[in-house]
Each structure stands twice: as structure tokens, then as C-alpha cells.
Image 1 (cartoon, protein in one colour):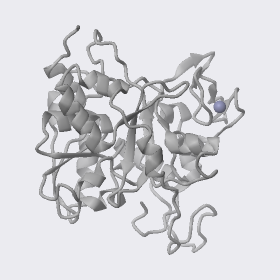
Image 2 (cartoon, helix red, strand yellow; image 1 turned 45 degrees about the horizontal axis):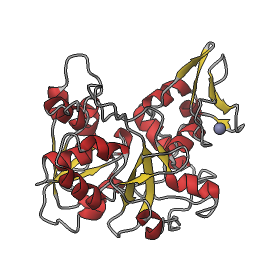
Image 3 (spheres, protein in one colour; image 1 turned 180 degrees about the vertical axis):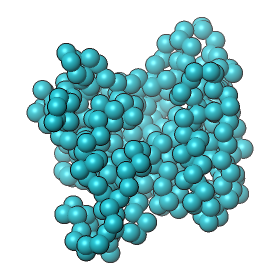
Image 4 (tube, protein in one colour; image 1 turned 90 degrees about the horizontal axis):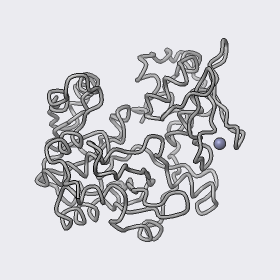
Length: 347
Ligand SMILES: [Zn+2]
């Protein structure tokens, strides 16, 4: 994550970035609330938006009227993405082009861990994942309207896709982050629109993304205050199993499933989101042939980042999504393209 370097983030500037702008960039759905906005609270299991954003003069924070929690821009990003302080600051700095401060002092940030101390992560026991495996989740149901059901089941099995069927999360799709060592780092859950009459029916419901590790830690099923390894590529556990496959690297796990179904001759992996394209995360790709396929709004950013990592693997960046995007579409990805190409039968 840190390239072994001690970074000093300009936290004053990071905290001054518009908090609603940050929420939008994270894909959070915002609803008008008087002169400001509200959204679902990432600190508790929130079904009705209770998190209010306050951007009045001199203020730039959020607070939940239901659970009372909230905080500044950095605290909000940490909670929304299950990131550490360092990860949240790095993402904000990169997204908004805010440079780090020269490190002329040896005083580490109070929350920064000493460099040589190995991070201690909590991994999720495989038994907890096995309980959840089934192909009846919202996304696989959508995929079965477009692809052979047997193929969907096979891809779901390869990536460990399952369904989190519990109160409030019925048929949420689970995307496990399993590292090259086979350890389950965390479980992202997301709900998908299953209305087959809508043109892009396999789109995620905004604001429905949650991390099961965090939920289970808050419920006491995992240690309280557990830290989860977040620099794991979705699908990286398959790399050792297919050592000669060309790798396709995309942003979202959903695109991995679409890609793997349409082009199974390549091994598809995902960073999780646009800001996660980082050297530490790409280490498992060392020495491989990799085609990088950013979403249409990330081509320039990813190309620049990949150039700086050309020593790691044989990368080629494709502007396919940008070229195929209909005029005016700012978010367009492999899954959109494939849905346009093979619309599901409306029955
Ligand atoms: Zn709350």
C-alpha cells in the first residue's frame, strides 16, 4: 500500500474536500434533505437514509441521526470503504490530486504503524464463507438470463460467489476477496436490480454495498475492532491455478463475472474500484501478461498509473470501454457493453 515509504498526507486539505462530492465519487446515493443531503449510514445497518451531510460555512462533516456516529471526510471514507486511515488518505490524495507533504520530520502520524511491524489482519474462516455459497443471489440470477446457467454456476464457483440471505440483506451477492494464499480477506456484499425490463438490469442498487467482515465484527461473530486486508485483487486466488492464462484486469467484481462468462479464455481479476489500482495490490500479477480494461471514465488515470508499474508485469491498457461508450455516458464498463450486446430475454 505504501510502497515501503512513509507518506505524510496533507490532512488539512483532505478534510476540506467537499464531503458530498466524496460520497458521490464513492458511488453513494445522495438524497436531498433541506439545503443539504442525506445517505445510508455506513456505521450501522441502515435501511432508510439517516446520515446527514453538513457543508454549511466552516463545516464539512456527516452525522447519523439514528446511531449518532459520523465524522470528517477521512473518517467517512474509512467507514464507507472499510479502509485504514492511510488507505483513505491515499485514495483521497490520488483522487483529488493533493500531493503528500515532504517528510522532513521523523515523527510518524499517530495512527501510522511502524514500518517493520507486520500488519495483523483478521481473516474470515472458510466455514463462514462455505455457509453462504449458493448461486441464487441477485446478480447470478441476472446473469442466467444472458448466459448458460451451467456456465454461470461454474464461474460463481470459481470466484466463490454466493448469497447473503439474512434479514435486511436478502439475496445480496457476496464477492469474497480471497488472496493468493487462499485466505478470505473480506466479503463485499451488494444488491442488484433484477428488473429484466430495465435496459441495464444487472446494475447495482446504489448505496447497497457493504462489507460482511465489518458487519460480523460489529455483531461479535468476528473479533471487535478486526482489521481486514484490503489490498487483495478480486479473483487473485485463481492466478496460481491458471499460470499460463492471460489476465484481464478491470475495476469491479461484477465486470469480472461478465468478462469471465463472455471471454473464459482469459483470467479476470478486479481492483474493486478506480482508486485501488496500486502497486501493492498488483504484486500477484508479477511477470504475467495483463490486459488492463478501465471503465470509460478511468482510461487516462489508469494509463498513467500503469506506466509507472511497467516493471511489474507485461501490461497493455485498452480504451475499449471509452471507445464503446455511447455519447454522453460517463460510466460505461464491460458489463454495460455485454448487456447492450446481448439484452436478456424479457420473459
Ligand atoms: Zn448510523
